[in-house]
Image (tube, rainbow, N blue to C red):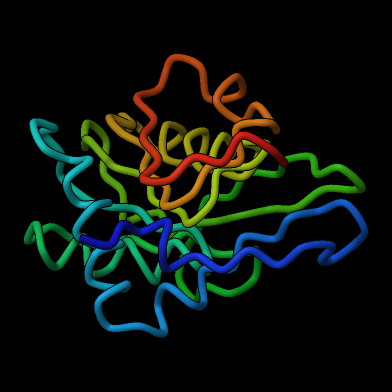
Length: 174
């Protein structure tokens, strides 16, 4: 029986020499791979009580929305600054070279809600940490973080210490 890892294509030396790029487009381009990925990520929620799934732009949408559908929960989008039309709340965070800002519609996350955060990749943990700060700013509680892939060599879990973090596939390197 195939595993999610079997659908991920590794491309050496992209985008630069020494990097092993983990390509998830080969997962979603295969019906069996996509179903398996979504099912495995949804299994990470077994035993977790939650009210909504929050997906991070943009690949968190790919996996988070079908997870919300499968669990009959609302799906909330966290987007890059300036992409949402209604009143938003935002958080700025640092990147390796510069900064970024993400936002969510203020009314989409309610105080006291238990939310699951979803993205495709756990690398340094910066974006997911900012997303957690964003939903907590609105009074919600992050009860789980789910990723399809993790690059454990980048130590993103350290930045997410104190949260319940799961990844379907973990790679040792960067």
